[in-house]
Length: 421
Image (cartoon, rainbow, N blue to C red; front, side):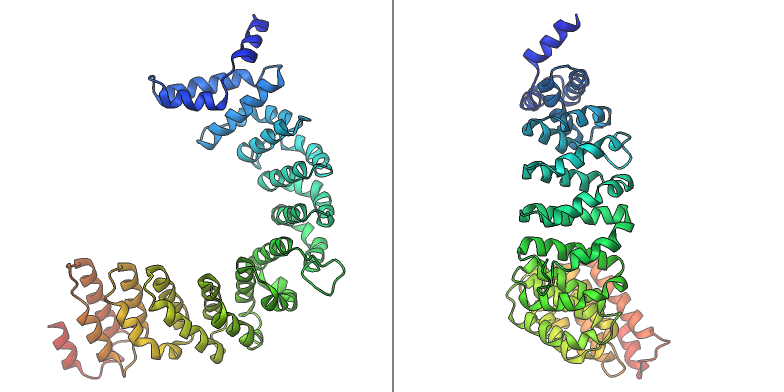
């Protein structure tokens, strides 16, 4: 009977397309069809025929993406990963990345296979191995394979070097001891004066991404990146890589007070000349978060915030106000001239923009402008159509503003009583 059953699987096995078609057209109901398909997969994974097993793994991956557990096929996935045919190997590697996780007991069996495929002459096999290692990396896999991944940093193919760099980030998270000896190798890829500098923009972008993420977690340990990243500010033409570099300086600036003054010229140039709103926003965000004490740079950033806040696009308008709210904490005097821009946003149709503008206006209140600010809030208390929640928020904000520090900003209580009445 076993032979007949195996023959039936070989001849009449449903493909993934067949299973999806059955799920769509079945009169039994989707769940019942899925359970039948999962039962077939369990049986097919035991088949001695490799192509049956490969198809079963492909279907198992699909159902894993729908939320069904595929851990029972873990060992069979590794068998398919070891298949000499690339098409089958790819199915196994993709299944491993989707189904397996750090706690999968079969992962130690992958070490030798990953090592072997990283040394392959087929660039696509190397790429699969790096991709899967990034997805399922454990401390043991990271320790055993870090030297192989580091070796790929000098691969002649830029695509492999890029994937190796990105894979190293996951290795560092699982095996931090690998960072110290590997960090100089990454850093010198950005240094034009180094013989091992990498000229490929994709590889350099990957290095910037990895170093940026590492610096975000612990900026103090990576301050020696400042010279290399400073040079990148004027040489990078890829906006997304430039955004990462600017982010890094946002992490560094609070730790190195002198850095803000050094960044005045390059950041001012980027803010005023870049046509990419995303790049402009990251620059003003970096200034707001860590360089607000540099007056000349803050003025440029605030002017750009105003441009954002006055834009017709609601998303840009909100981003401009959000940046203002950040800089309000450390440099409120720089926002004094933007009061009218904030007031204009109080009547915006978007409630999130109105709320953000209301919060900023409250933060801008001083003894001199209290009356004008409260009157402005009061003038915008009624909307068409009526929004009772908004009216209540405005009233609460007025009361909170006036009573702050035990009425410290109030000089005319008769005026306040008139407002309340």
